[in-house]
Image (cartoon, rainbow, N blue to C red; front, side):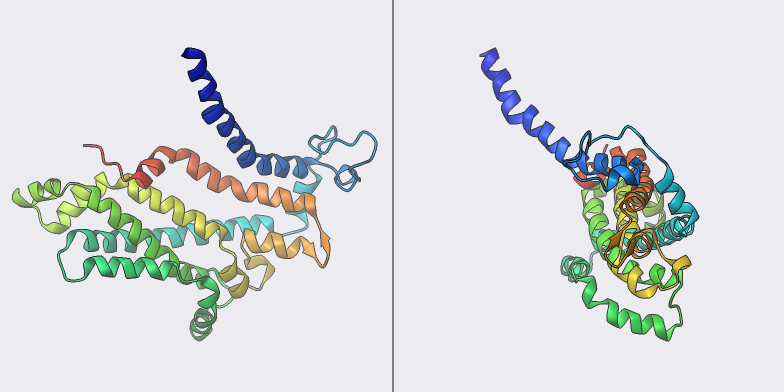
Length: 283
């Protein structure tokens, strides 16, 4: 029995998990190796003598040096961080208030309104950037970070609202009712009772909103034209791909550095992120 259980554990758990981890992490490993591989090895044919596609004996920082000295990568990182952080804060503020109202306030069609709000998140961005471009032009915000800060909440707020609405519904109403009985107003009950309990959900919404803002491409491509105003996603692809020439080393270096902030955010709040997605509330 023990041998049979061990065999099933390897076949149905250990081996599939190892394959999943390999498929998940191999692109990052390839990105790291390509970032440090010199051009002499990078463009060498696979059938060349002593060629090792998955390792390099002569690592170099030339691609990173080119990224910071020949492009505005540092400025792109600052732009992306400012845009993503500001858009996330705006979307969280609106999403928390809207989610609380839809989950706690008793008014007609609250459930249907929540569904409609989430449906707006599903509208493809390719259908919205043309009318949004007209609005940005009318307000003369083109080619500035504010053009993205004002447009990103159009798809971040519906998602944050939908996620927070589900999390607020998982919080027992008795907690808020006890505060109301003791004389607290609804605003104070929400601020001091409900929101502290909902911190995992708020962090989960913030992480996803920050990731979506950081990786967004279409709006950043359409609304930003100056090289120094671009974000990482647009700047790396537009400045390091020239016609049919791909600067693979610098491209992978930019992708590696561009993924670091998101990885840091996930690593610091992973427990809150998981509990927020599962809707778990600790009593």
